[in-house]
Image (cartoon, rainbow, N blue to C red; front, side, top):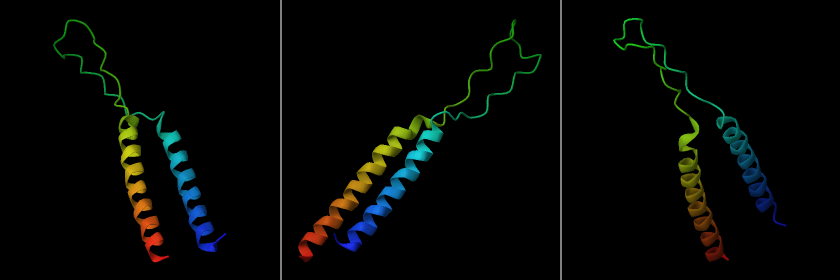
Length: 85
């Protein structure tokens, strides 16, 4: 096997593992909760301040865009390599 291909494969595997570790860690993260309202907020009863905003919501959009970009770069690379042969 070509040493250049082995080097590229190792790089791709390392990057994939790095992103997998980061995305698994992001799944359970949330932004800080909203502080409670002041005592004279105008409502007759205390109300829940709401929940925190999830950070991982755009993860699938990010993964899709990264996959499309990576696919395009890979296609161009292999097309160029095929033309050179």
